[in-house]
Length: 266
Ligand code: PEP
Image (cartoon, rainbow, N blue to C red; front, side, top):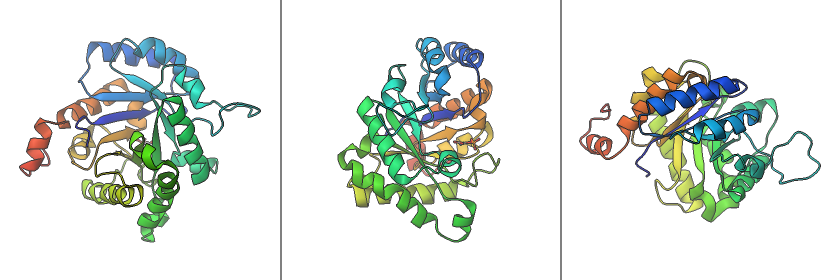
């Protein structure tokens, strides 16, 4: 597994150009040294490119079209996003699956467009509360992953997967580290079994109510390659605190502590 933990912020339908600049100033002044990016609204990509370009902070978008060009009014293609120097694009966020009815097939097409454009897609998967309560989590996650695995095969290692239980998003209640370990282990096994990738070849993030108070406990788990952060990514101090936790939990020092059984080491 990649030793450096990844922190991705999802601004959703929030923010403004002034906030992009405030983050850039903060990142230039006080950067903890982890790998991090903010996924901003499309209209702020130009500002992100101008402001973050001189900082260690990277940037990305929150969606891309399943199409490359043509008569698709209002759509933004992966190629257009890449033109602004973006490195990442979120695909299949639960808010889009639920509110806009995005299907697994459309999500696979978006991932393929993103890869072709040179972006790293971050594919969001996760179960709803009623699916968790009905003990359907494994079935839901397997369904969300299988089309992707079959379509990509060799390209799978270029994708980042974000496990975001829908019940944890915006609720203030993250999944427990034990639940996260268990579920990320299941996702890694599914990718290995159906996609033939070796364990750890695909980075798997956790998302859902990550904030400065719980980031260390979550990021210290060996199964967690990083976090996807919504609300707390809008506040520079909170985001930087999470990035600091990620830097502390990155190898090599962290790996040594894990091997010694001290999972709380940061
Ligand atoms: C998200 O929507 O991707 C997310 C993780 O949100 P929050 O951190 O606010 O739960």
